[in-house]
Structures are given as structure tokens and as C-alpha cells.
Image (cartoon, rainbow, N blue to C red; front, side):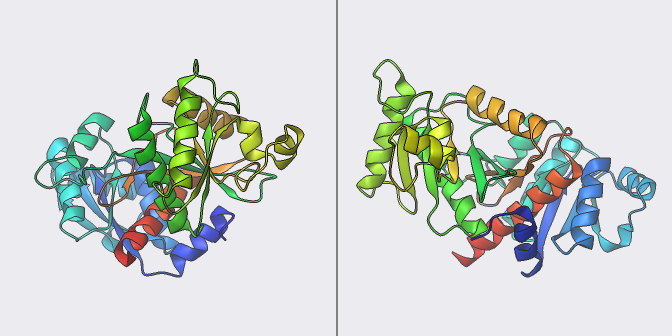
Length: 304
């Protein structure tokens, strides 16, 4: 089982290189990421945007632009649609946001004619390598779905399972995280968690093991789970943390990012191809890790 991002990168490098379509590619941090992804054997890229601005930015960062195909489209919204179309037509395997606002980028991703709609819910999966933990932690959804109901949580969970399997975890263990580990009718998240667990037990949610409600300590720490006499295959051993809402997810995501020496990456899934939607605040390493995750998910889709 893959336990670190170093192993993730090695797995990607040992496979056939995938191609990223970059929407509005004249963004310095993004060009640095795709330059180094190509150099390290993680992915190739097709750059869509203002050709002159792309070339000037590439020159500024010492990037050999001759290694990349450029499609000139000076209009940002049209460039985003073109980048998405490259993926939906099979010329690229994943799409990455460049110098365009998130709303217009996502409109292109969900374009009715050339977009990546599947009919499934789109959700964000963040992956963390945390010091002292013996596994990667998959965190969802910290960025996209605000207050998911039970149906949405099923989709979010299934999306995260697909990412975990693409990374190399055959049967991911998923914890439905709540403030407490008992069902309380006054706390709707605990009711949802118990239903998810029962649905998994009865085969309605497949390919993983689900337990909940579990408090965060009982999901991450075997010692904490044992202290509270909580047993089972997920207790203290969870791979996937299904958070109850965006506040809990976002706080946990940023706490791990800014208060620990963790490594991370993240992608949007639920689409017909992975979507790389990194923040300008994300480190260069996080952008490369996100590209690697997207490449593994793209390869998994092609092999399924």
C-alpha cells in the first residue's frame, strides 16, 4: 500500500505520462508546476491561453517552451472551454486551472456541450501525508460542497474511495466524522453517519469499509479508540475522513496545512476526468502532488 507522496510520485513516473490541459496558462506558479512535472516525468501539458503572455512568463522562469504545445486563445473564458474540450475529446487526460477565476473555470468544466459532466456530484478530495502517521489521509470535502445531505455524502464518499483506490489502497477504510461517536438525534451528522455505516454493511456502498459516527480522535488513533472501547476495522485506522460540512473540512484542511509539516495534494473528482484546482496559496510541492494524484486517477479511469 502506498503510504507517502514519494511513493505516489514513483508510481506515476513508472506509468505512461498523462497530459494536462492548462486553462489560461499564463500563470507563473502554474507554469512552474507543469514545467517541473514534465521534467520529473509526471505529466505533459498543453497550454491554452494568450500565447505571447505564456511565452513571456515561461522566459521569466527559465522554461523551455518548445517542450509544450501552445493553443492561442486570448479570451479567458474561451480558453477555459478549449482546455476542457481537449480533455473531453481525449487529447488530454486532465484539466488544470491557470490564471482564471474559479467560477468561470468551473463553468467551463461543467459546460453542457464539451464539459466533463457525468451526472454525479463533483467533490474535492485532499490527501495528506502527516508526520507520525503510517498512511495517507484522504480528507473530503473541504472545498466544494457546503452542507451535504445524506445523498450527497454518499457521492462524496464514493468519489474519495475512487481516489484512494487509484493511489493503491484496495479497500479504503472510511470514517464518517462527527463531534461524538454515538448517535444523537439532535445532531443530524451522527444520524447520517450511522446510516452510511449501515448502508455499507448491507452492500449499498461498495469498495470500502465505513464506520460512524466516529469522533476524529477515534478515527485517527488506535489508542484513543481503545480508551473509549471503540473497536472495528476502521477505529483508529481510517484512511478517508468524511467531514460533515465545509466548515469542519476547511478548518481541518488548513490546520493540517499551516500547523504541521504535512505534505498534501488535492483534486476535484466526480467528473469524467480529474480537475486540478489548486489555490495560489498552495506550495509548489502541493501543486506537483496534485498533478500526480490527477495522473493516477486518470490512469485508473482508463483501466476501469
